[in-house]
Length: 354
Ligand code: NAD
Ligand code: IPM
Ligand code: MN
Image (tube, helix red, strand yellow):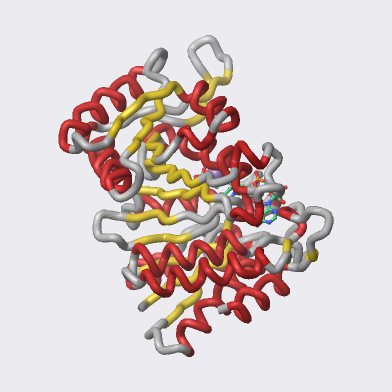
């Protein structure tokens, strides 16, 4: 099990340290885990002058799975765009062909009161958001800033999807729905944007291959509202890169905190990059405050999706559940009556529970 480990920036190294301890438990119990570290994002810019340098690229290409913390920080926000940490993340996603981003918004029953929504709205929540990850306005050309013929500055991006890109993510989403409650909601803005009208047309066509799946469509503005109004109406959601980015952060709050939302980004051959859905949280970096559970739960996804090791995945998820049931909470999911713990202490507890 060759795993590249990219700590990244901000809270990245703090949360990855806890995830590495989880991997170490599995390794000492017999899994043939080999890890190799490399910088990504700002850390890579500092060391190599590029956010996804060749050194890192080589290690990630050779690995079967990549475990990532998060990238980015205010100190890098003024760099030329190609040098910024976020470009490193987009670069590795594109380089490894990681087009399918799975973001499970699952509420641990113990956290029903941690959500800002009423417990009865979120309890029992189990949504899988399938976000297309290597297309859309994130990568479309032309893009950039320029001065127009009237001498005024302007900026543009291009929202574009090819038929094959929509088709393959639709197949992934229908495949996942088949293994769940067989309900898929495709999110678009077909009332305004041609790109997503096209998306809707292709998804509707792919649906003919999956007659058992009940397909529905929502406009993204309505979907954002429905996620808060009645999130349990959803089983699987499939959407493009930009809408998926936004809706998955929104959905994370249904689980109690963005510090709980894991993710897997997969290519055609199940090679995957596993990372929490959240960012580098510069506001709490270096203070041992971050919630490491999204990253630890991403290790569970890594075991499940790349290595087909369901028992290791369940062992990690079971340990997280046990620690929550014991009443331990990092600050982001804390409520009165619970025991507040640091990032490293949460790591200790998960390791002990394993
Ligand atoms: P963010 O997700 O980093 O933080 C948003 C809020 O959530 C902050 O208040 C933060 O403290 C909190 N938070 C996030 N993760 C947490 C955790 N594990 N435990 C407790 N609290 C947590 O989003 P942002 O502030 O918009 O972005 C900060 C930087 O991260 C930017 O440079 C951005 O580009 C980058 N970013 C990177 C990724 C990634 O690497 N995948 C994802 C999103 C944002
Ligand atoms: C995410 C992040 C990234 C994205 C940024 C940091 C490039 O927000 O993984 O959700 O927009 O995809
Ligand atoms: Mn995001």
